[in-house]
Image 1 (cartoon, rainbow, N blue to C red):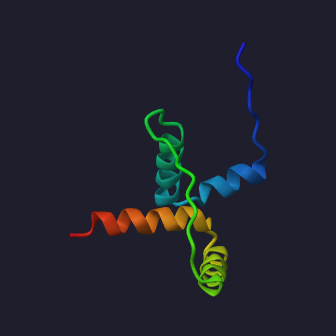
Image 2 (image 1 turned 60 degrees about the vertical axis):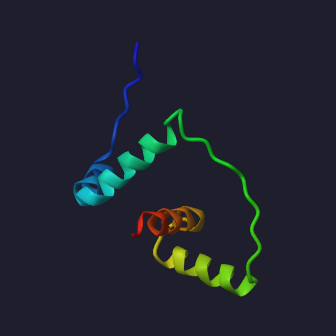
Length: 81
């Protein structure tokens, strides 16, 4: 027997206001996260502490996880021509 998930009216109302891009980004992130072919590698990097603090604060303001943002920036840089 499969479990049933119930949603309250407040949650459903919030979901109605979610933009299509946000849904697509969530689905793509979920797909990548659960992809068996994608492995993560723990790295260590040195950078000025002030740069890291500023970067993390900006990510917090934009409600983005800072490590995710670093990965996105790396991917964008690699895709540039």
